Length: 338
Figure 1 (cartoon, rainbow, N blue to C red):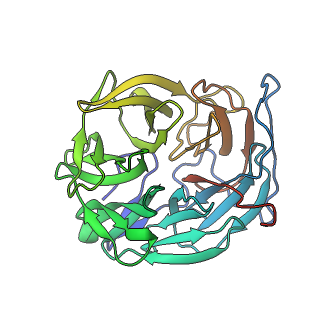
Figure 2: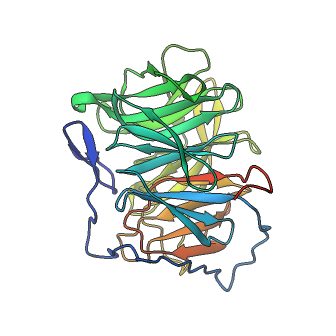
């Protein structure tokens, strides 16, 4: 089975198999000794202060996770020990959780990139995750279940033990998710007919429901995060307006569904379209994410864009990772941390 998105995932024996390179354009190997190539466009006027926060960028093509400083995107570490790292999320301790579809495992990484623990997923192939700061629960989205059956949401109580499984009967593929401030989980994916859909697993609910999206249309699931400053849901589309370009939408959530209230278009460092940002992350009135470039408009790179303005990035780091996929922020826990 082939995922109907630009970043194609192939399935074999219930495991997700990602090709090392999908097209000749923009393909390259990982540098033996990768170095940071931080670029701030000449017309950019960054107003972001230097922080101790780092962004973790997963690369299923090389089975590694690259760790960069924020906002300047200096490479500080490359974490290893994975089979196919994909979607990510961060917890309140500053640790980053990484889903691995091939290993059927979710890894917890501390700020330095060291693997602290791992959770087993025997019910399918994990692709995304979300952290609930109210309960300390970890939600994991399985793109597919075993034997290529439909996926599910797995909730690990206090991020440990065996998970509880939740479903939306109308949803087949489950991808990325995020919790709002009240403990409601929103997640996107594809319907049984292969169309984009957004779902909600309300706090203390036993079953997820479909969230009707109005005033716009999405095509390919991307990031899902709650913007507490605007009290909005932010959802990414890997094929914005059904074109080879990624964008994100701000949505107001009501009892009647989700209403699109804004669109943020993303450009690379030379002003071209971002071909495919699979999973970005909100950070300090910015979006941090990577472009898995296959349309030839620029190099594969990780960027820091203003949000909701978008446009050209404030900072970028073109790098030779194979397939940048997920992103999550690790907040440095204290001054004595590495």
